[in-house]
Amino acid sequence: MDVRVRSAEQVELDQLQSALGFLLRIAQLKVFQQYFMQPGEDRLKPGEFSVLWVIKCNPGIRQSLLCQRLMIKRAHMTKLIRALEERGWVARRIPDEDRRGVELTLTAEGEAAVADAAEGFFAFENTVGSELNASEREQLMVLLRKLVNIKGSGL
Image 1 (cartoon, one colour):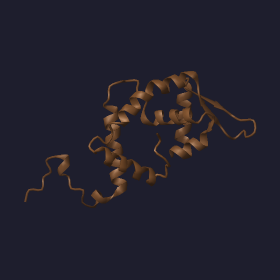
Image 2 (image 1 turned 60 degrees about the horizontal axis):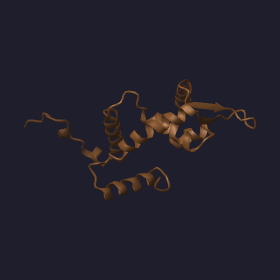
Image 3 (image 1 turned 180 degrees about the horizontal axis):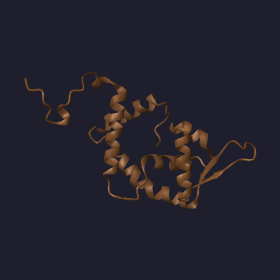
């Protein structure tokens, strides 16, 4: 019996085919691969855009709250915010009433960077799941929001 595998699609996954975490991770990798194949060298990474977008939507948000909402480790968020600050896109402020907290806002340059990136980012996002029909895509979105406890449609 010839058991040689000739293509990636022929690799046996057995029980992994029913492992939700595995499937979510493979889906994420596929989406990122497609995202980075899009033209544009200065495009923001998905994590960078997400952080900037949430700060835009929540001016003055505490960095710790941003970490919690986006599920980014504090050390990674600190590095990311520092890098965005060095690019002139994010301003940090330590409030007088709580010297341990850090509040984040976008600078004018940050607002412009988010505005420039938003159209391309959301246009790409509208292509994700193109293998699904509109009803299946909406059902997947509803189920994923339920899985990660995000209320509403985001529209």
